[in-house]
Length: 318
Image (tube, rainbow, N blue to C red; front, side, top):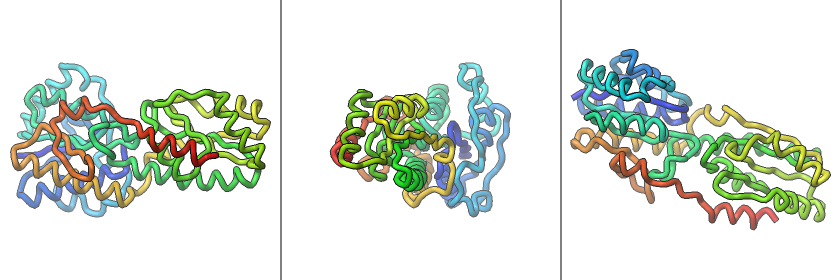
């Protein structure tokens, strides 16, 4: 038995912790393991190296991924996927662990359909892989956003302003939602909920009438750029309005305790599943338990928006 491992798609804090857990669990069981650099593109380029305990020393605290990541258009073709399968056979790698988000795990599913034994580990800061309650990297991204927004609120308060803070989340607004709740944002705009611009401005105006002159508006990027909002809000409320895009700072940084914890557990359980001849799934955390869910089933689980938390924000922002 030989295991290959790669990280794919957008990097997420905790990927290295998951990699470390996979490698060390494999080594503990005397299973050879190989790292594939640069995701599926690196697999197609045969950028494959043996890994040891020492290869993953002192990486648990690092953001990003030491194996690096990329996106490969060729891999998305049937020819590319068949080529990848042949390369795995050439290297004698009979199990492949894929750490990444929805797109990366769909790539793993394509290989599974070609007969490759795959195991998935969900890692995406957007938290948009619905089969797992939380994905590796999300908690750290939220904490990073909270820290930045807390600083923004200091200056927003000092100058009696409104600040529209844009965070990542094209289809899933969880970063805006969870960070917004934690920083006491007055408004949260996410892809999952239709919003009324007049309603937003009326909420801000009601606060202004009570003497409240500073507000944080959380905006998930799936609802546009902060630049689309600052002028209309300022014109409607007559309160100076600024905007901030937190951008890629949300991707980086040392992973939080929670992300290190789930990454280590997911990595360990992925190798244990392989040893038990239970590959073909993805390790997810559901209701506090780590489960090996069939990959095809997991990819069909819809992401459920936390409407209850959204409603609480509306109540607490009065």
